[in-house]
Image (cartoon, rainbow, N blue to C red; front, top):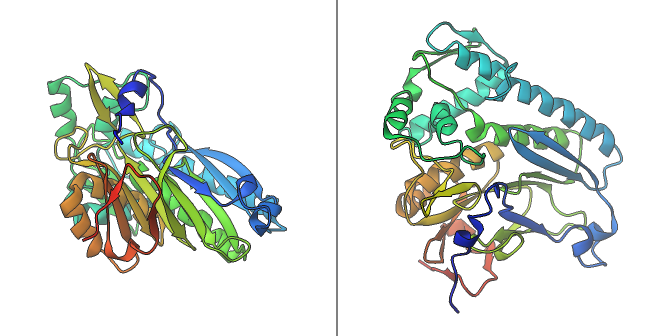
Length: 360
């Protein structure tokens, strides 16, 4: 059966920026009527943070509304701390004072930056939180997205360098050495927020919950109410929203996908996706269409799905295999082949005949 590259057809529909890449099945009205998950309506709420819609569902939680109110306040605080675009946020002030003076920030902001810098060091800069200027320049996902002029690209690329970020944990201050440098903590900010939500729910004794960040990252707290694993469907990168190419079983875990089809634009017949390579300042070019990370915390998953995509198949596979014992990855290549790390083989199932799982 021959595949058509549907992104080429969809590309004319500019603004298709929040494509659902991971679809949750086995809950709500779509589940078996005998399934306890289907019978019990969850307490749910939708939030908006870091340009992402967050949906949370709490199952069999008598204090559900109280818990969701607390999460609402938690997310508003994090947005006021970590947002790059909110003019009243701590991070916005840090960027405004680049090359001028250090800015005092919260413990959360210090923690997110600390982890970002650790990822940068572990990956030799393939993950770099100082790419904010490049993100603004390309503006992918917004109406002004365009291929920048070479001189503009070089200017912003010269400002990238995590080594020029000075963090004082004792004083809780951040200083950007280079004027014009823009710190962007969005690479793990959503994951960090999701981890705080999950930790809070576990502390409150919630046994079954879903935290869905824009459809590209899902945290499951515990199992389904009936004790079964959750089943997550992975979006087919070349098909319309809701068409899956495989499923993964989850229990008290996190899954995160980065793909070329999430946010992109087309200029002169060329597709430009949102995953930037800090070395070139341009969208990463390799054989991959998407990378999915499965692990025990959303902060790692958020960072790794991006940086492993930039690494490409061979180096990315090796990096994840050696990262830790709880992290696994799934790679989809442009020729519709699927590669998974060793620990994921029993959890993943191909459901679309157009894809081939490569067993190595």
